[in-house]
Length: 296
Image 1 (cartoon, rainbow, N blue to C red):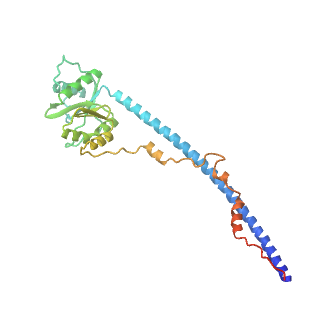
Image 2: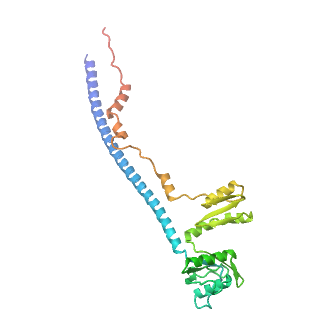
Image 3: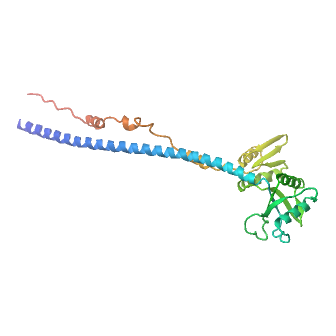
């Protein structure tokens, strides 16, 4: 009996010791759950701030695009009375009193305009900004601003009808004074226009940067070089297909994620089970049944 008493005392001590350890474990689990709740709350708030910031940045990008379009339209309107003259050698105007006098003389001679036929009112004229190019490079264009839009349109029409003119052995051409961005977009069609010329397909570059092509009885208008190259490639022309570059707005949409928690009270922290339930179930699996003793 004494041995049994000793065993029972040891078991009671072991049980008390286990209860103390389990209490410590429960306290640690409670603290960990508290820290997890705080971390989840902070992560949720950070997600909300990020999503709100992304929404604001998206609206700012959309507004920037609208403002850029308006700015482009405004700059184009300020250049409505302007033309650019290409092909005039550098320093060809040095013997004239001013660039305006030189341009007027050049246009009258090149387009065969008499003094009575058209009164050219040039407000100002100058070479395009930048240092003089090397001798083997194309000369800088001449920017001319007229007082009248009608005068500018009439001169351009005459120049286009004559397909430019020759002056001192040099081919001279006239064109609109496009803003740099529009000029860049129009130059993107260079390869397309080259192929169309080789195939003898009529085309026309429309304002601001569109291309009208006539395929037999069909007339097609392309708004971008991407549309032009994709359609021409599908028609069997040997043209390099241009891919549309990814915009900042498209890149932002790819990086945006969805909210994980639907809001306060709906997150996983509020659905967590009793912290003691987990380890109780595990300990129950290892619980041994008490030994049964038969009396002799």
